[in-house]
Image (tube, rainbow, N blue to C red; front, side, top):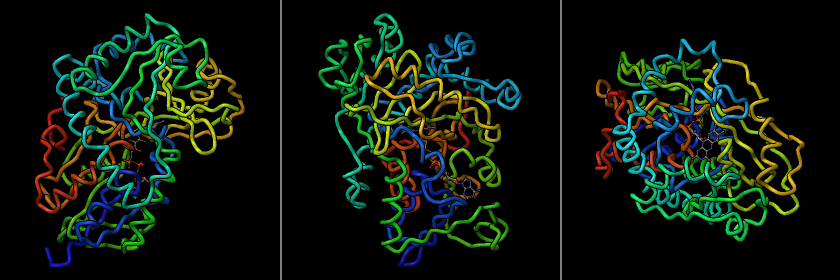
Length: 416
Ligand SMILES: Cc1cc2nc3c(=O)[nH]c(=O)nc-3n(C[C@H](O)[C@H](O)[C@H](O)COP(=O)(O)OP(=O)(O)OC[C@H]3O[C@@H](n4cnc5c(N)ncnc54)[C@H](O)[C@@H]3O)c2cc1C
C-alpha cells in the first residue's frame, strides 16, 4: 500500500456499499463507488427503516418450516412462492431446510448476534460523521398480536434468544402497548417491545446523506453497470467505458452479487427474498414506532411522507414481473392494528432482499483472489448491518483484526 492509500472500487451503492466506501475512505484510501443506478435506489430504498438491535433469529427455524404448507395456501401469509421459480430455487430451499435444524439455528443466531451487537455503534460513527442524527428516532419497535395464544406461540423462540443474549425487551398487554403507542387499535392484545431498536425516517435520505459526506470528503461516484471482473492482468472492473484497474474491489451489489462472486471463483447460493411496500397517508394521530403485525408478518413504519407497509417474502427470483397485489392486500389488514388508517395507496415498490439460505451474509476476502472482497447477502437486516459490514471490510483491507470471527460469513463456507 502506498503512503496515501489504495485505489479501491466498491460495486453497489446501497447501504452496504456506501458504508464500505465511508469506512475505507476514513482509512485514507481513494474510493470509487460504482452503481448502475443512483445511490440508495436499490433495495436500500424501500425498506422499513428499522435499525434493529434484536433481529438475531434466522428466518430458517423449525417453526418456519412447520408453517410453510399453511402459509402457501393463505394469500395473506408472509410467504408467497411463484411455482414457476421453484426449480431454480431448489438448491437454495434444500439448504434452507438443512439450516432450519435446531443445532444450526443456535449457530446462526450466534453469528447474527455477533454482527447485530456492534451494529448500532457502527451506525453511530456514520451518523455523527455524516450529520444524520435528524433522520434517526429511538424508542424501540413493537411486534403486535390480536390473539394472545398466537403471540405466545410465535414469539417463544425469539424471546428465548432475546433473554439468552440479554437484549432489552418487554412483553406488554394491549393497554400497556397503547400507553407507549396510542395509535395502536383496541384489537391488539399483546405486544413485544423491542426497546433498543431505532428507526430512520427515510432509508433513502439516510443513504444519500452518507453519499454527500463521501463526496464532500473526496470520494468518487460513477454511474455505470459493472459487466465483470478483470482478473487477467492485476485486479479491475469491466464496464461499458472500458477496463478500470484497482488495488482492491469490494462486491456489494446486493442480490445481484452472485455473478461477480462466481467470476472470482465462488459459487454462493445467493437468491432473493423479494419484498414489497405500499405507502398510505399518515393517520391524523400517526404512530411513532415501527410495528410488525405478527399474524401476517408485515411491518408498518411511519416515515417522513406516509405510513410504509412492507410485505413478507415472495420467492420468485430477480426477473419475474412484480405482483403489487401482495402488498396492496396488506392495507386493510394494517387497519386492524392502527387506528384511523386511510386506504389510499400512494406508492408501490418491489425490492430484492439478498439472501443466503443460512440467513448469514457473505463478508470476507476471496481465498483465490484476496484483493476481491465480498459484502452482500444481508437479507432482512441489511440496513441494520450495512455500517458494521463497512467497518469489517475496512479492517480487512487494512490488515486489522475486526474483532469478530468471520468464519460463519466466509464465501466458501458449508451451507448445510
Ligand atoms: C420490504 C423490505 C423491508 C426491509 N426492511 C428492513 C428494515 O427495516 N431494516 C433492515 O435492516 N433491513 C431491511 N430490509 C433489508 C434491507 O433493505 C437490505 O438487506 C439492504 O437494503 C441490502 O442492501 P445492499 O446495499 O446489499 O443492496 P442494494 O440496496 O440492493 O444495493 C445494491 C446496489 O448494487 C447495484 N448493482 C447491482 N449490480 C450491479 C452491477 N452489475 N453494476 C453496477 N451496480 C450494480 C444496484 O443498482 C444497487 O444499487 C428490508 C428489505 C425489504 C425488501
